[in-house]
Length: 300
Image (cartoon, rainbow, N blue to C red; front, side, top):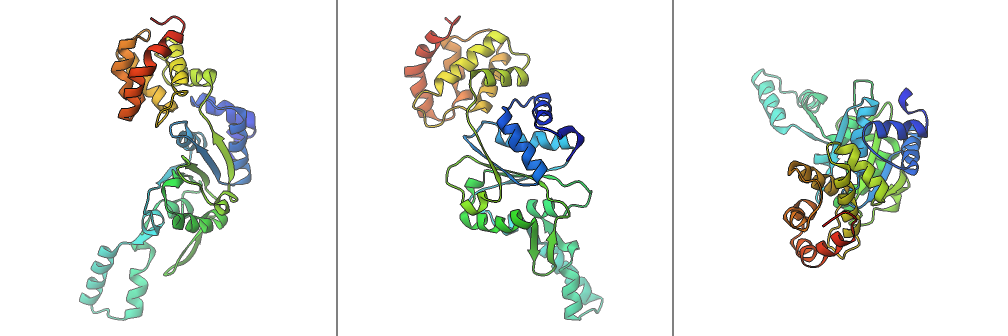
C-alpha cells in the first residue's frame, strides 16, 4: 500500500484532491480493498461514478489501468488470452523450410510465450514492471454467467491456467474494481470473493460539490439550478434516470452556451444532453420542465 493511502482519511482526501467526491463509507470500502488485497465490487445505476474510481486509483497509486469491458458473449479468448495463429503458422513454415521437422520441438516453439496474445485478465496477472496494475472489470452484469464462473479462479487465487504453458500466478494481486449496473444479479459465489459497496445517486450537496469540482467554470447559481433540476427530475417516471455523468455533460453544455441560469427554452433545447431516450424527453418536455422550473428559486 502506498504512503498516500495509509488511512481512510487519506483515501477520502486524495480522492477529493483528484476531484472525486465520496462519502466516508465508500472511502472505507476502498481502503479495506487495498489493505486486504480483496476485489471491490461496486453496484449502482449507470453514471454514478463507479468506473471513475478505478481511473482515479490508477493515477493515485501510479499504476497502469487495465480495463476489461464486459459484454454478452465475452469469452476466454477475448478476456484472458489467445494464440497468435497467423504467426504460429508462419513460424511452422519457416521451421519446415529450414529442415526442422521434429514435431515435439516445433510444438514447444510455437506454443511459447512469444506467440501468446495477452488479454486484460492475463495482463493484470502476468505483469513484469514490479507494480501490480489496477484491473477494472467493467459492467460485469453484461457478461454471461459462464464467464462469471471462469472469474472465480482468477479472483480466488489470481492465477490463470494455460494448458500449453501451465499456471501463471500473480506475484502480488492487482487492485481489482468490478462494476455492475445491476441489469441482472451477479452470483453469490463471485460476490463472496469481493468487498461490496452500493453507490446511489448523490444527494443535492454531494452532487453540487461534484459539479463545482468537475466544472469549475460553471457559475455557482447555474450549478445550483442544474443540480436541483436533475434531483427533481429523478423523481419522475422515466425509463432511464440521469446519472451524475449526465449532470456534468449538461452543465458543461450550458456553460458552452454561455448560460447564466435555466429557462424553459434552454432546458427544452438541451434535454438531449441530459436524457437519452425519446419517450423520456417527450415526457419531460410535455409534463415536467415547466413544473420543475417553477419549484426552483430564482428561475423564470
